Structure formats: structure tokens, C-alpha cells
Length: 142
Image (spheres, rainbow, N blue to C red):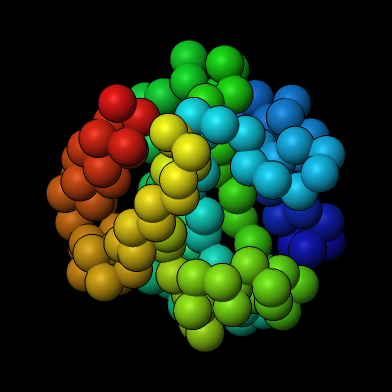
């Protein structure tokens, strides 16, 4: 029962985030759209409270603070199981729960690994985490 409720809550959360970009910010050929920033949260099958806080806080920042950008398709949040997305995890050298922001603007890809910052702040200092993440996203969107 708890799993069913959790799945329903996660589905509702993704729907509420305006996740109508069904291909996750990617064009059909697999290349990222130009001028898109992706917030990628990589996770394993089992997650600690800090890992869950990182996902929740990051998704909330993207969906609330940047709702217009999400609607326009210039910002995308994706929660990715490492085992199910091995190629992408390998690309960013991910081996455990991680938070990466990728800017595909101006014909080149710029990835910023925010994992250390996320683990230091998401659970015990969520306001610091939200502010720092929002600042990095704004920097990459400009």
C-alpha cells in the first residue's frame, strides 16, 4: 500500500512539475536541445534521507522557482536511476547519488557537479541548498 501511495505521489509530482516535455529535454535524435539546462539527480535503488532530501528540494526549486522556464522547455529536472541510465552516468562519471546541472547553450555542453554542495546542505540547511541551486541554475540559464 505504501509503495502504491509513493508511486502515485511521485507521479503527481512529475505531472505537477509540468513534465509535458515527454522526451526529457532531448530531441528525438538523442541530442540535447540548444539553450536547455538540465538538473539531473542520479540515484541508486536504495536512498538515505539525505539523498531523498536532495531530490525533493532540487525538484521543488526547479518546479516552483523556475516554473516559467520549465513551461518554456528551457529547464528540465530529471531523476535518474543510475542502473537504468548507465551511459549517462558514465558520461558524467557518476557512481553514486549525485546532482549535476548541465547547460547545453551556445553549441557546447557545460556540466557542473553539485553533489558535495547538495550533500552538505539539502537535509540540514535546505534554505542554503535551495538558494545555491537557484543561483547556479540562473547563472546557467543566462
